[in-house]
Length: 369
Image (tube, rainbow, N blue to C red; front, side):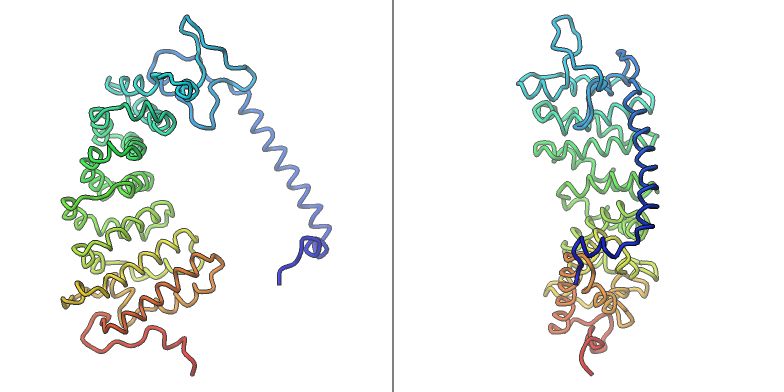
């Protein structure tokens, strides 16, 4: 049973508390100094340069001016007019987003393009009416930045397309860049680019004509999943879970080669967010194997395949799942149980792990002796 706060405090070592308070006080003092220094740091004088144009469109938690100076009222001589989002709230087009897009058309260096794209992304999220008034040509302009030689520009362009994908009328236009995005994430090993590209793909319905390209990039997606960068892993597994529901892609996923330690993704020490997504992926793969459409064909898998790692005779997936049933996070517990039920159902319908031998129960070790 858990202790009440008074009980917990009563069992604490007072000396440790004093040391902790002293350490905490030092940390708070350093934090205070950092915040104070940040407040005193004045932004540079604004000019008509693209960098300054990019800085003017502030984010949701940023101030248009330093905290010490109040924002001036609207001026008839072109002075500061406050936050663009405030102007839109009052039914006025701030022109910020259009100004940024226009500046992107001119030849800029990589840093300037990254800054402008970053600010366009923030403005799309903040200035809904202005973003909705953009055109397909604007989307094409941003998409053309995916061909830039600098990875930071590519990443910012992916983020901008992701922002525009929240507006329904632009989704078909953004889909035209799907193959290019798949090419980027499969040929460039950059974790931030992987996250940006996969977030964009996960925000779009993927048309059937990109399935051949998806087959070609499947090994790259599996490598990203087995990397050590959590954000990229989560995005990769979400995409794979979506693709696992496509009948014509299921075998390509199951036969994809994985590392010998693939089941480490199911260890309880993994972050709960990743564990949950991996378990959803396993459930969808299991359900796909159980479908009449898939069982109508006798499939063959290579020895290092994902299928063998999860569902083969030598797989230790059952042990990992049973350990996750008592995971601290409830959603992980529930999802682990769903996978267990799905695997048991596969035994009932007679799905063989990978060979012609009769399959055994995945969970004999969990039964009473």
